[in-house]
Image 1 (cartoon, rainbow, N blue to C red):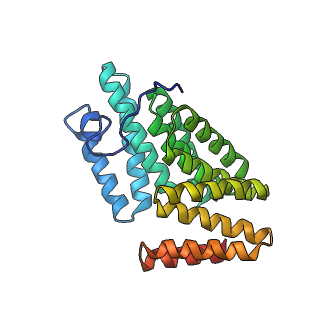
Image 2 (cartoon, rainbow, N blue to C red):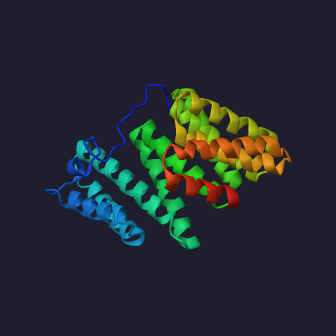
Length: 250
């Protein structure tokens, strides 16, 4: 990816890749996308994943019949459907569903590269890295984080850099490279604090609490636990409960 790569909005509303502009026949794909999105918003992950998958396949089938400009829009629509589908399937319990989520993300990465869209590439890689680490695929997660770091080098962005450092740190914890993990996670926490990104700083301190405990540094681990909970309190009781439970099971 070069520094002059195109950067398009990721938002599902009002972007050039939105379902409204991607639909080749009077909004059919837009309606199908809206049905999938409604299922997702009401917590129906399996039906939402199936519907997003249908949207993706329908757009893919229509692709070769369209003019170049519409092909571009359809590819953006396909990327959006693929990302949503992978996000849904990554939260389903069966291993085959999580494996399918990874396959979707590989396709999303390919589409983002075809579109020369760094924001879409970043989102796809970030979700893939996160899922790999959560599934215990630490080497694969580290490889994705390295690609994110390369993307940051070509297209400097504090947001991208934070995510790359977080995924790198978590992967390194899993690979038992603890000193390197602490370095990455502390860098992420410092950058997030500077940007007043409480959510990302919380995640970094949760990772630090885990690795510092492993290393036997109970004092600094406690400091990270306290900081993570302090930041969670800014978002309300539900977030505090989530963070406390995550810290207990880390």
